[in-house]
Length: 120
Image (tube, rainbow, N blue to C red; front, side, top):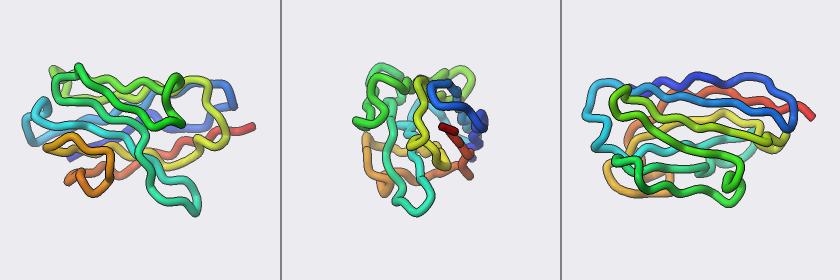
C-alpha cells in the first residue's frame, strides 16, 4: 500500500514536499517513482529512484527543480519540489516497481494521488 501526502495550494515560485509511505513489502527492493497527471493530460513520469537510493532520474520538466529521495528505514519516498510553476499543477502519484522503469506500465503498485495546485 502506498499513501501520498503533502499536496496543497502554493503560489508560483513556492515549494512543496510530497511524501509517500509504503507498507506491506520490503521497501528497499523497489524502485520508487513519482508521476503526475494534469487536467486533460496523460499521466507523465516525473522522477524515480533506485532501491538503494543511489541512482535517480528526472523528467526534463523536473530536472533542477525537483529532488527525489527515500528513507528506507521509514519506508518513505519524498519529492521536494521547488520553484513551482502553474504548469506543475496536477495530481501526483507515487508508484513502486521491481525493475528500473520510467514508463507507468513498469510500476505495479500505485498510491491514490495527492493534488498539487500552483497559482500564478
